[in-house]
Figure 1 (spheres, rainbow, N blue to C red):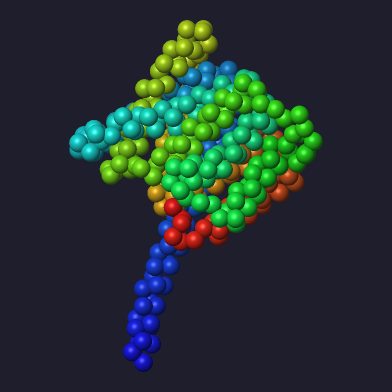
Figure 2 (figure 1 turned 30 degrees about the vertical axis):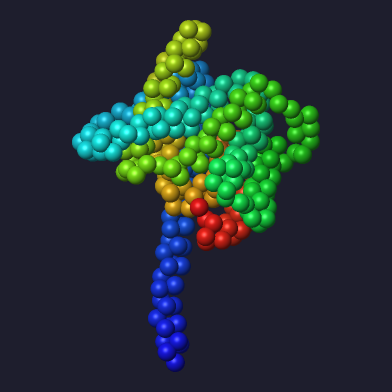
Length: 320
């Protein structure tokens, strides 16, 4: 009888723990979905930017927008947190340079050398890079179910990239643009993994340091673009693109992604990156008037199933 009573006393605690884990997971899913929605919108914004603002100018100005917003709205908070921020500014700058500046720059440059199908396929490989990096850096092993889930999400990305035509990938090969995009994906995957080592400071203050690092490290790229005679300051439409990219894909999305990684870890959070080409295709239909085909629905279903499988394939002890 005593053991039965103890069991009954433990059950509510176990149930509360499961309920809290469920709430945490759903909060993470919401944050990560919001981030990928914004990044999907970035695909359309990039199309609108053509002829309106040059790639490196857009890369630098997007992070300048974030820094200005922080300095305008929270200077006292940043000043109060500076003693916590100062020891880690080099680490934050490195993360901002690799995760924000380099990835954006590589994406813009790669578009000049490689077709969109290659870019889509290569970006879809980021979750696999994160899982591999988690294994190498932290010894986090992927379960067979998780590997299956990642594979299914990659198939979904391939469906989008090839428009459902398997023949479109015949003759697929790597060129300079592909290598640039792979390098950018590897940098962002490393950034995702490095978020696990975020210093003990308020998340927004650390994000400010990374955004400032991205802004500063964008300046040499803008200088090179100017030296080559390619720098174009934004037109009126270009400024609209800069503001959208700065507020959405840069400020809101990156903070939401950071929060998602905090809640469920980089391996699980990285899977949601596969939603970006799906949302990008959807926004292209709505905003650019492109046709929505059956393969879009198939791809969306594959990505969702893959994410769910990968989630189920991780035990609670390994969901980090």
